[in-house]
Image (cartoon, rainbow, N blue to C red; front, top):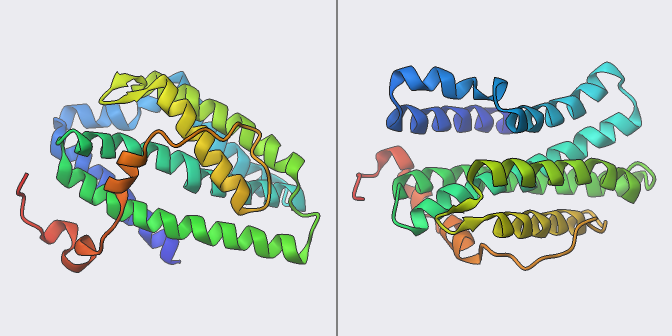
Length: 219
């Protein structure tokens, strides 16, 4: 229940950011851009299709794939998006927006930890429920499409984000996720190219004490 509530708050936060920087006539087009952007539509459909498998055919394998989809969504796709905002803040742009993203990041860390714990508990009780082959089957297309979509969207050297750093970062995250549930990533473990951005994403507690919407705009 708390995760569902937090996701609603996250959605409202993203809407608040969008409405703060875009003209009203632009917003509708942005919300429905996935219909005209093939890579974005694939990215959205890929996740919904994995969930639909279990809804349409509720068996053990489809349930396991749904859990893995949630793990990758929380641990790779969301984090990959956060780096864009942290890169802006690193270059002293939209720093208060990064404060808001940092709070969302904190919640997603909790969700990620939950799915890691859930999958490891299931593996202990039912050793064959998750397998390396099943993880690879879900992980490979998700990672490849995430790289493709990200490179198309903002991987042209924007504020220190390049095609190479995107690819290395997604590979790095895939290894973190795989290791956390006792598997090997099908992708090489690249060094994290965004250690400087990770430092921006650390919640030092100051935002929890004051709250984003209670702070004064100082930058």
